[in-house]
View 1 (cartoon, rainbow, N blue to C red):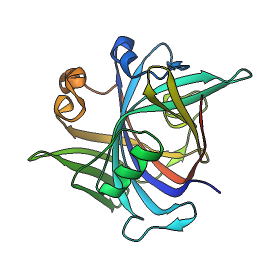
View 2: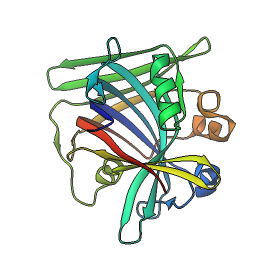
View 3: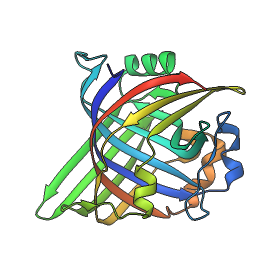
Length: 235
Protein backbone atom coordinates (compact mmCIF):
# COMPACT_ATOMS: atom_id res chain seq x y z
CA UNK A 1 0.00 0.00 0.00
CA UNK A 2 1.23 3.49 -0.86
CA UNK A 3 2.27 5.68 2.06
CA UNK A 4 0.42 8.61 0.46
CA UNK A 5 -2.22 8.78 -2.26
CA UNK A 6 -3.60 12.14 -3.34
CA UNK A 7 -4.17 14.44 -6.29
CA UNK A 8 -1.80 17.26 -7.15
CA UNK A 9 -3.73 19.83 -9.18
CA UNK A 10 -3.08 23.14 -10.95
CA UNK A 11 0.67 23.24 -10.40
CA UNK A 12 1.99 26.78 -10.94
CA UNK A 13 5.73 26.52 -11.59
CA UNK A 14 8.31 29.32 -11.92
CA UNK A 15 11.81 28.22 -12.92
CA UNK A 16 14.94 30.22 -12.10
CA UNK A 17 18.42 29.55 -13.43
CA UNK A 18 20.89 29.65 -10.53
CA UNK A 19 24.61 29.06 -10.04
CA UNK A 20 25.18 25.38 -9.13
CA UNK A 21 27.26 26.44 -6.13
CA UNK A 22 24.13 27.93 -4.54
CA UNK A 23 22.62 24.45 -4.25
CA UNK A 24 25.63 22.42 -3.13
CA UNK A 25 24.91 22.91 0.61
CA UNK A 26 21.50 21.27 0.04
CA UNK A 27 22.71 18.41 -2.20
CA UNK A 28 22.05 14.97 -0.64
CA UNK A 29 24.82 12.39 -0.49
CA UNK A 30 24.94 10.02 -3.50
CA UNK A 31 23.15 12.49 -5.78
CA UNK A 32 24.36 15.06 -8.29
CA UNK A 33 22.72 18.08 -9.85
CA UNK A 34 20.52 17.33 -12.86
CA UNK A 35 20.83 20.04 -15.52
CA UNK A 36 18.67 20.87 -18.52
CA UNK A 37 20.71 21.96 -21.52
CA UNK A 38 23.46 22.97 -19.12
CA UNK A 39 21.14 25.07 -16.95
CA UNK A 40 20.80 24.58 -13.20
CA UNK A 41 17.25 25.33 -12.02
CA UNK A 42 15.34 25.94 -8.84
CA UNK A 43 11.56 25.97 -9.14
CA UNK A 44 8.90 27.71 -7.10
CA UNK A 45 5.86 25.41 -7.18
CA UNK A 46 2.35 26.07 -5.84
CA UNK A 47 -0.46 23.53 -6.07
CA UNK A 48 -3.38 21.84 -4.34
CA UNK A 49 -3.50 18.50 -2.55
CA UNK A 50 -6.97 16.97 -3.08
CA UNK A 51 -8.60 13.76 -1.77
CA UNK A 52 -5.57 12.93 0.33
CA UNK A 53 -5.21 9.51 2.00
CA UNK A 54 -2.43 8.40 4.32
CA UNK A 55 -1.87 4.62 4.24
CA UNK A 56 -5.24 4.34 2.52
CA UNK A 57 -7.10 6.30 5.20
CA UNK A 58 -8.61 9.77 4.64
CA UNK A 59 -7.66 12.08 7.51
CA UNK A 60 -10.52 14.39 8.57
CA UNK A 61 -9.87 18.09 7.81
CA UNK A 62 -6.58 17.20 6.07
CA UNK A 63 -7.75 16.02 2.65
CA UNK A 64 -7.63 19.25 0.66
CA UNK A 65 -4.96 21.90 1.21
CA UNK A 66 -2.39 24.13 -0.48
CA UNK A 67 1.35 23.61 -0.74
CA UNK A 68 4.09 25.91 -2.02
CA UNK A 69 7.66 24.66 -2.26
CA UNK A 70 11.07 25.61 -3.55
CA UNK A 71 12.89 22.67 -5.14
CA UNK A 72 15.80 21.72 -7.36
CA UNK A 73 16.68 18.78 -9.58
CA UNK A 74 19.09 15.90 -9.01
CA UNK A 75 19.88 12.43 -10.26
CA UNK A 76 21.10 9.26 -8.55
CA UNK A 77 22.67 6.18 -10.14
CA UNK A 78 21.48 3.01 -8.39
CA UNK A 79 24.05 0.74 -10.04
CA UNK A 80 22.00 -0.04 -13.11
CA UNK A 81 20.23 3.17 -14.13
CA UNK A 82 19.88 6.87 -13.44
CA UNK A 83 16.93 8.03 -11.34
CA UNK A 84 15.89 11.65 -11.83
CA UNK A 85 14.47 13.33 -8.75
CA UNK A 86 13.90 16.51 -6.77
CA UNK A 87 15.15 17.94 -3.49
CA UNK A 88 12.96 20.31 -1.52
CA UNK A 89 14.54 23.32 0.14
CA UNK A 90 11.32 24.20 1.95
CA UNK A 91 7.67 23.08 1.70
CA UNK A 92 4.93 25.33 3.07
CA UNK A 93 1.55 23.89 4.11
CA UNK A 94 -1.35 25.29 6.18
CA UNK A 95 -1.78 22.57 8.83
CA UNK A 96 0.67 21.67 11.64
CA UNK A 97 -0.04 17.92 11.56
CA UNK A 98 1.14 17.79 7.93
CA UNK A 99 4.42 19.40 8.92
CA UNK A 100 4.83 17.03 11.86
CA UNK A 101 4.26 13.86 9.81
CA UNK A 102 6.41 14.92 6.84
CA UNK A 103 9.32 16.09 8.97
CA UNK A 104 9.17 13.10 11.31
CA UNK A 105 8.61 10.28 8.82
CA UNK A 106 10.31 11.62 5.69
CA UNK A 107 12.78 14.04 7.31
CA UNK A 108 11.56 16.75 4.95
CA UNK A 109 11.67 20.52 5.49
CA UNK A 110 8.03 21.52 5.98
CA UNK A 111 6.81 24.66 7.73
CA UNK A 112 3.28 25.75 8.62
CA UNK A 113 1.82 29.07 7.49
CA UNK A 114 -1.63 30.55 6.86
CA UNK A 115 -2.40 29.88 3.19
CA UNK A 116 -5.06 30.50 0.57
CA UNK A 117 -5.62 29.90 -3.12
CA UNK A 118 -7.81 31.19 -5.93
CA UNK A 119 -8.81 29.43 -9.15
CA UNK A 120 -10.95 31.23 -11.74
CA UNK A 121 -11.83 30.10 -15.25
CA UNK A 122 -13.42 32.76 -17.45
CA UNK A 123 -13.98 31.93 -21.09
CA UNK A 124 -10.68 30.55 -22.27
CA UNK A 125 -8.64 32.15 -19.47
CA UNK A 126 -7.55 30.24 -16.37
CA UNK A 127 -6.23 32.16 -13.37
CA UNK A 128 -4.46 30.28 -10.57
CA UNK A 129 -3.03 31.94 -7.46
CA UNK A 130 -1.38 30.62 -4.30
CA UNK A 131 -0.58 32.79 -1.29
CA UNK A 132 0.84 32.32 2.18
CA UNK A 133 1.68 34.50 5.14
CA UNK A 134 5.26 34.93 6.37
CA UNK A 135 5.22 36.96 9.56
CA UNK A 136 2.80 39.79 8.86
CA UNK A 137 3.29 39.78 5.07
CA UNK A 138 1.40 37.85 2.41
CA UNK A 139 3.50 36.28 -0.32
CA UNK A 140 1.82 35.33 -3.61
CA UNK A 141 2.35 33.56 -6.93
CA UNK A 142 -0.22 34.00 -9.72
CA UNK A 143 -0.39 32.56 -13.24
CA UNK A 144 -2.81 33.41 -16.06
CA UNK A 145 -3.05 30.79 -18.77
CA UNK A 146 -5.06 29.57 -21.72
CA UNK A 147 -7.70 27.21 -20.29
CA UNK A 148 -7.08 24.51 -22.92
CA UNK A 149 -4.21 22.21 -21.90
CA UNK A 150 -1.95 20.25 -24.21
CA UNK A 151 0.36 17.24 -23.91
CA UNK A 152 4.01 17.68 -22.98
CA UNK A 153 6.42 17.89 -25.89
CA UNK A 154 9.20 15.28 -25.74
CA UNK A 155 12.52 16.85 -24.85
CA UNK A 156 10.94 20.12 -23.74
CA UNK A 157 11.80 22.13 -20.67
CA UNK A 158 8.31 21.43 -19.31
CA UNK A 159 8.92 17.69 -19.63
CA UNK A 160 12.22 18.02 -17.77
CA UNK A 161 10.64 20.04 -14.95
CA UNK A 162 7.57 17.84 -14.42
CA UNK A 163 8.97 14.36 -15.03
CA UNK A 164 11.24 13.74 -12.07
CA UNK A 165 9.79 10.70 -10.33
CA UNK A 166 11.95 10.39 -7.22
CA UNK A 167 12.43 12.46 -4.08
CA UNK A 168 15.71 12.76 -2.20
CA UNK A 169 16.14 14.14 1.30
CA UNK A 170 19.42 15.21 2.89
CA UNK A 171 19.15 14.01 6.48
CA UNK A 172 22.79 14.77 7.28
CA UNK A 173 26.13 14.82 5.46
CA UNK A 174 26.25 11.09 4.73
CA UNK A 175 22.60 10.08 5.05
CA UNK A 176 20.04 10.34 2.24
CA UNK A 177 16.47 9.08 2.00
CA UNK A 178 14.90 8.19 -1.34
CA UNK A 179 11.21 7.74 -2.17
CA UNK A 180 9.26 7.23 -5.37
CA UNK A 181 6.51 9.52 -6.69
CA UNK A 182 4.26 7.89 -9.31
CA UNK A 183 2.01 9.73 -11.74
CA UNK A 184 1.21 9.83 -15.46
CA UNK A 185 2.59 12.49 -17.77
CA UNK A 186 0.84 15.82 -17.15
CA UNK A 187 -0.82 18.21 -19.53
CA UNK A 188 0.23 21.87 -19.41
CA UNK A 189 -1.68 25.10 -20.02
CA UNK A 190 -0.08 27.75 -22.27
CA UNK A 191 0.96 30.58 -19.96
CA UNK A 192 -0.11 34.14 -20.78
CA UNK A 193 1.24 36.13 -17.83
CA UNK A 194 2.34 35.77 -14.23
CA UNK A 195 2.90 37.74 -11.03
CA UNK A 196 5.35 36.79 -8.27
CA UNK A 197 5.29 38.88 -5.09
CA UNK A 198 7.69 37.06 -2.78
CA UNK A 199 10.54 38.02 -0.48
CA UNK A 200 12.72 35.00 -1.26
CA UNK A 201 15.32 35.93 1.33
CA UNK A 202 12.75 36.10 4.11
CA UNK A 203 10.92 32.94 3.06
CA UNK A 204 13.82 30.70 2.02
CA UNK A 205 16.88 32.22 3.66
CA UNK A 206 19.45 34.84 2.74
CA UNK A 207 21.12 32.48 0.27
CA UNK A 208 18.11 32.86 -2.02
CA UNK A 209 17.57 36.59 -1.56
CA UNK A 210 19.14 37.24 -4.96
CA UNK A 211 15.99 35.77 -6.57
CA UNK A 212 14.13 38.95 -5.53
CA UNK A 213 15.80 40.76 -8.41
CA UNK A 214 15.70 37.89 -10.91
CA UNK A 215 13.05 37.09 -13.50
CA UNK A 216 12.13 33.42 -13.93
CA UNK A 217 13.51 31.73 -17.02
CA UNK A 218 10.06 30.24 -17.58
CA UNK A 219 6.65 29.95 -15.93
CA UNK A 220 4.26 27.08 -16.54
CA UNK A 221 0.96 25.69 -15.31
CA UNK A 222 0.43 21.91 -15.22
CA UNK A 223 -2.93 20.22 -14.64
CA UNK A 224 -1.51 17.45 -12.45
CA UNK A 225 -3.10 14.09 -11.60
CA UNK A 226 -3.46 11.44 -8.94
CA UNK A 227 -0.06 10.66 -7.44
CA UNK A 228 1.35 8.18 -4.95
CA UNK A 229 4.38 8.32 -2.67
CA UNK A 230 6.01 4.99 -1.81
CA UNK A 231 9.15 2.83 -1.56
CA UNK A 232 11.00 4.96 0.97
CA UNK A 233 14.52 3.75 1.71
CA UNK A 234 17.91 4.93 2.84
CA UNK A 235 20.58 5.06 0.14
